[in-house]
Image 1 (cartoon, helix red, strand yellow):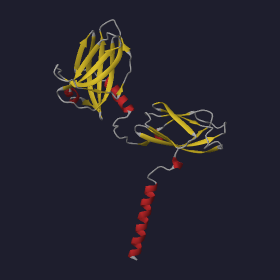
Image 2 (cartoon, helix red, strand yellow):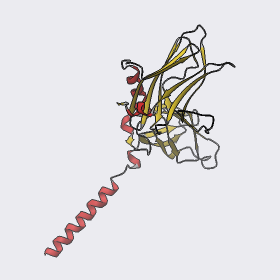
Image 3 (cartoon, one colour):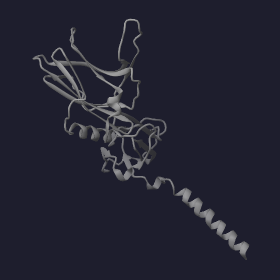
Image 4 (tube, helix red, strand yellow):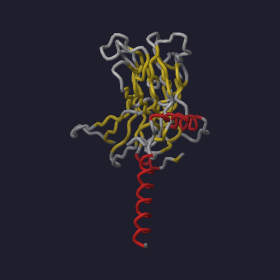
Length: 280
């Protein structure tokens, strides 16, 4: 009797584990149903930049006109769907920076059907997703940059001026694996400054003629504004991936002008400026 009871309990536990494994994912029947026709494209609007898209049908073509916009269109003349009048096309998968969303896609030739031209990817349709190497989403970076922009200005951490242009580092903050640099440029001349490019380079602190100059350029992963020129004042937030460099090197921030005899201004940051950064 004891053996029989133990055997039945083992069967029940096994069934429970199998059921738990089956319900751990998302069933196709639980996905939202989206309908499309051969008339016009359908647009998915994501709250975050789209990292990956999968469309499980050769009858659908898709592209990304913008970072957060997926456009799909039914292809009416493909061999796989030339006899299709109504039917299931498959699953559309959209992966953002922190979520995955999936939809059942159906085709219908009924032109009186209330088709949607755009679909917002809503929070209840998202499942959280951890993307390797990404500690902050674009939205979180933007919110942090606005907070930094609205923070009170203290005494400048670093500053430099030349050719009537002054640069100053207002604040340095860190969030996740990112460094936020708050920089303001002032123009005391009557000539507007046409920005050619802004470069961030790790270079030797002292350069002599006998040494080879080693320079490593660091590309910002994000910046708040993309202004082409400024008249009197220009303030921006630049975001860099977490970086380290020895004490005999500095982070040079170069702002260059478009003119042939363009003005060049360099702002030097020490590694200690980054180490002393506040955290959000």
